Length: 181
Image (cartoon, rainbow, N blue to C red; front, side):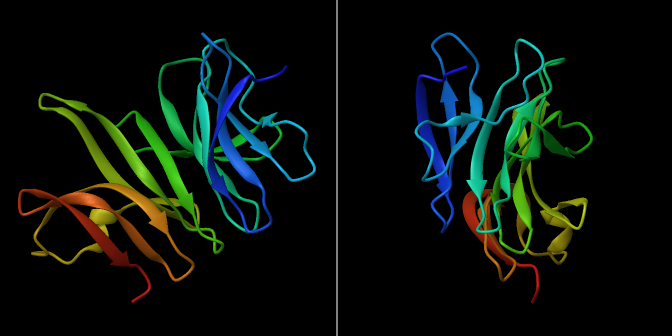
């Protein structure tokens, strides 16, 4: 099975690339390529006609993260891809059917966001996945911090520092949380 189109989303220091690939009129597929590869390889979950997935980040240990649906319902969850068509589902939060893993550190911290809909539209919650637990980043802030919500987490480094975006006193702003301070 050959994928015709692709866009790179992340690269490790070893040169392994994770990407989104697709054929016209078909769902996005998680893919990867290494220096020795002549073409990208589909690493997405293969069952079901309407599986959609994207590999968004890779660390220097080779952990690949993104999201995938299971082919049975419309929801997609944050996942760790195994590189051979399987994945570990990281889950989501109550009331938010979908989630996305956006970055992974070499120490294994994974960040991203869960999202869903309410009467006002789309709502999102930034998360940290550490030691098998999905953690709402708002729970890591002191009361009275001024943050109304942390909407998405986009990056994490090996020091446990997380960056993303949220609502601070009614305005959309960038944040940095040091989880090991």
